[in-house]
Image 1 (cartoon, rainbow, N blue to C red):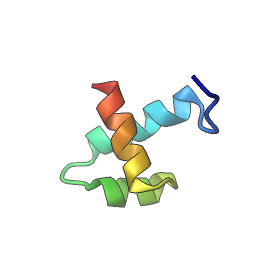
Image 2 (image 1 turned 90 degrees about the vertical axis):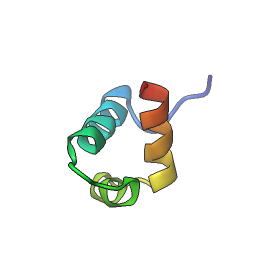
Image 3 (image 1 turned 45 degrees about the vertical axis):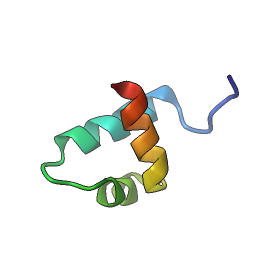
Image 4 (image 1 turned 30 degrees about the horizontal axis):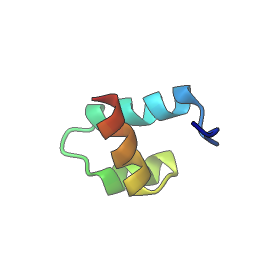
Length: 48
């Protein structure tokens, strides 16, 4: 697989922020993290 510009720790933190946000949307959490909402959605899906 190719290299990612985001570290595994950064991705894990984004996923944790999404799960910790009560009622938060991908878009709202992604904005806080600084990534596109589809990228965060992919990270969350891959973490499941």
